[in-house]
Length: 255
Image 1: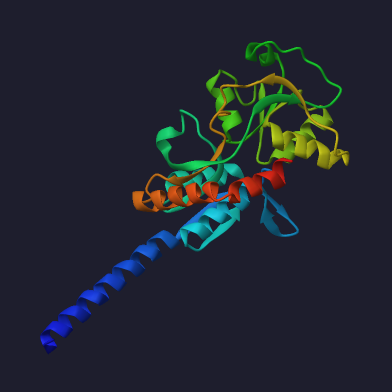
Image 2: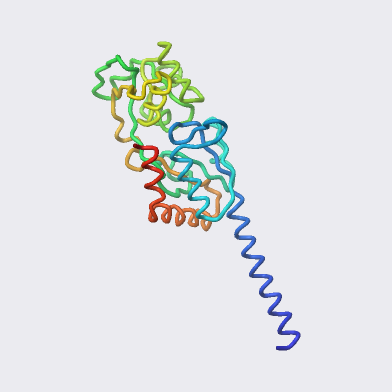
């Protein structure tokens, strides 16, 4: 092989390596945001854990990228994911209002939504309209609050908005609100943590079947994230599901 051919081959190989590194860097420069939503995402002894977190960590590892997960109030995480590039957000409900705002990777955990009360309370709600007369605790910008606002409820009239789910539970205990919109696992977890009784549970007063239950909670990218990065994570999630890792994580948290 001539010296000129060797130089051309060397330049070609360098270009391939450069492109590969560039692709890895682009896929690796991921910001991951979430909130404190136990048992899906929660900080325990300074470490972020939970079912959603473990699934996302498995997907990140499978995708072969490095990413640091940051927990913060939901409204802040949601705003960052809406307005920044290369941001992954979880555990997020996939609703018609959000469909075009994000690039969706897939479902990472099951969920069912209700209006809850404290144990010992009964409201006999037959429809959402029956709940309009009561004060309902919500979390700022979360899917439950967005859902109720879309149904004609209003913050300051029959909704009281907080930054954290545990604040809503505290409002219930203090009698400042009557009801609480939450997904099932989170509601039961917070009641049991507060009471110290593993058998105690929040009381579902009205099922909200049209609130993203079929899709579950998801991981999604900000809209400006390159499609190839999103597809890389979709395929990684599929492999995590296919080889049993997802089922192993779910069994740990949903038993």
